[in-house]
Length: 383
Image 1 (cartoon, rainbow, N blue to C red):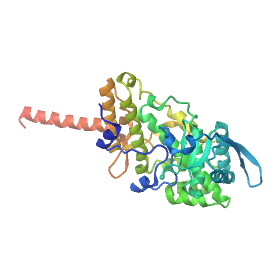
Image 2 (cartoon, rainbow, N blue to C red; image 1 turned 90 degrees about the horizontal axis):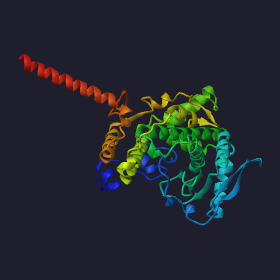
Image 3 (cartoon, one colour; image 1 turned 90 degrees about the vertical axis):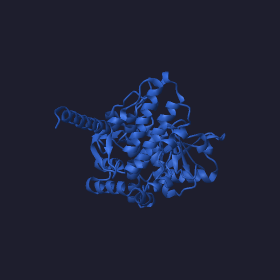
Image 4 (cartoon, rainbow, N blue to C red; image 1 turned 60 degrees about the horizontal axis):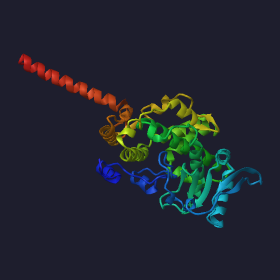
C-alpha cells in the first residue's frame, strides 16, 4: 500500500490532530470545550512546536519560592528573554500556594523536566515533550489558562516513567487506549484538585477557567471534596472517572491513536509488524501507578475499572477504522491487531452498552445463521 498517511486518513475519515495539546477550536467543533491543552500520550512533539528547542540556550537553574520566601525546590528553565522567564517564574511561584502544586513542582525538579514560556502553535496552550523531557507553555495565552496547564503537563512528566513500558508500537490498540486515557483522566483530575486548592487560597482564576470548560469534572470533584475533603481519594477518583464521560472529546484521542498506529504500520516492513502491536498492558499496574498522587493510588488497585463500559467503550466509526487498520496490518504481515473487538459498543446517541463489538458481531452472526437455518428448513419441509 503506497498511499500517504494523509490520503488514508482522508479516505477513511480518520481525524488528524497536532501533536501535544488539542486545539480549543477542535473541541468547540464537537461541542466539547476543555479547559487546557492536553499532551498526546503517543507522539513526541516536533521541534518546530517550540523555539526553545532549536535555539542555543541551555537550561538554567531557577527556584520555586513561596510567598514567605521559602524555597520549595529548584527547576530547570530555558529562557527566551527576561519577560518570558519572569512570567514563568511567576507561574511557578504562584503554584506553591497549592499542596498539589508543590507536589508536582517537586516531581518536575526530581525528573529534570525543563520548563519554558515560548511561542507555540496558535491553538496549543502547552505540551509535554517526552523526547526532550520538556514542558512548553504558550505565551499567547493568559496566566489563568497557563497556571493549571503547568500542573497538567507536569503530571504528564511524572507519568512518563511511571509504568516503564516498552515503546507504544509494541502494544495493541486496546492497551494503548487504556494507558492514554488513564493518563489524560489523571492529569485533568490533578489540575482540577490544584485549581480547587488555589481557589481556597483566594486565587480563583484557574478554577474559573477550568469550571467554564470542564464543568462536569469540576462539579464531580467539588461534590466529593465537600463531602469527603479536598484531599480525599473520592474527590480525585470522581474527577478522574468523569473525564471518560465526555465521549466526543475522548474520541479525539482515539483518532490520534489510530493515526499513530497507521503511521507506524505504513513506515515498517511486514517482518517488523509481526511483533508490533501485539503485547498487552497490565491494567492493575496502570491504575496503581498512573492514577496516583504523591505515589499513592486514589483509584484502588483493581484495573478492571479501566476496562468497563464507562472507560473502555469506543464509537462505531472509530471501531470501523481500527478494524480497517487490523486488515491493513494483516495484509502486510499476515496478522492484525484485532484488540478493538474487546472494547464496548457506543450507540448512535452516545450511550454505552454492556456488550463488546466482538460479542455484538457474534450475536449478529448467530441470528443470521438461525434465519438461514429456518429458511432452509422451510424449503426442505415445504412449509
